[in-house]
Image (tube, rainbow over all chains, first blue to last red; front, side):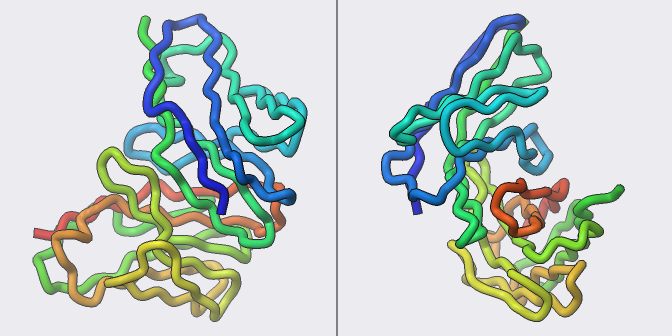
Length: 110
Length: 113
């Protein structure tokens, strides 16, 4: 299983764009890259998933370079309610198991 | 539109007691999972199931048992609770089709004293 490395924590202010980068050097060819968000006392929530290049939805954008050894989650104009832990996980359909790391705690301040 | 429902939400056990956590999903998902989350740590996979009647071990299976007698339910059992099992337990389900995400329950906070 691919091992991921993310910053333990990040600070930001309301209205700023936040980019969280995750490295996954040994990602498998058939792995997707998924990102989850977890608020205190809640289960993780799926945010976005991609395989390569760029994916955008109503919540975030995901940038994946050609070598797929890293990915960057971009949150536009964050608000206080975006304060949460963000997890990057490679997801291989064949194994169908999500293995979580420690994630990145994003703290948004006014 | 319940998604994944976990019961109970909170429980306090004495060391050596047993209990069962129930997870129910109404999305007809094939795959179900039990995770535990300890302070400052990510989620660790305990057991999972790829279909009715099947179970498999995850990263930290010791001290737990599971059963999947019905497709919509996944039970996690603690036969003899220990303080080290104090944690928040999350259940999740997925369609297992690869490109779709998981749906998590809201968690069960278990304290073993």
